[in-house]
Structure formats: structure tokens, C-alpha cells
Image 1 (tube, rainbow, N blue to C red):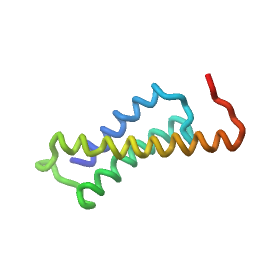
Image 2: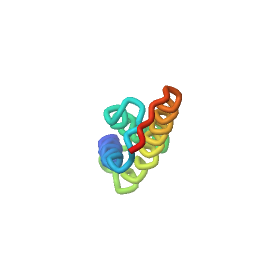
Image 3: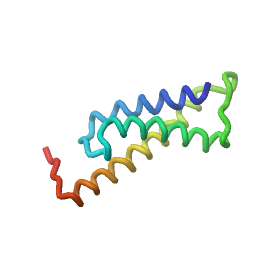
Image 4: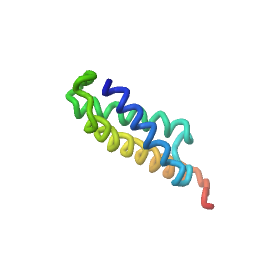
Length: 93
């Protein structure tokens, strides 16, 4: 059950990418994948590579997923920015 919570929180954090310029490597679709995978992997790491069951799922499990999604999105954003700069692409508004 916690895996569902982690993934849903990753999707919720992904929705905030609309407020930043689209410099994600692979666009918004890969940003979606990165947020989901980042939150799930971070949740697994924090939980000791086990998925807590339904009785062990609480609000803390939702908060655990947020740093994982943010870290994954930030890494993808900075990598995409560097790739654009290396290719000479200017995406300024």
C-alpha cells in the first residue's frame, strides 16, 4: 500500500513542474517518469528495501516520497539544462 502512496505523491510533485521552464531532459514525459521512479526508489531506501503493508501506511509514508521526487526532477532538470547549453540551444523566454 505504501508503494501506491509513494507513486501518487511523485505524481503530485510532478504537477508543480508547470511552474518551471521546460528544460527537463526528455521533456515533461521523462520528468513524469523521473518523479514516479524517484519517489518509489527513495521510499524503498528509507523503508529498508521493503514495502510497508496497509496497516503500516500513514501520513509519514506520503512525506517520505517528496524528497525522492524533488531530487529526481532536479537532477533531470540540471542535466537537461547542461545538454541544451552544450548543444547551443537557447530556450529563454
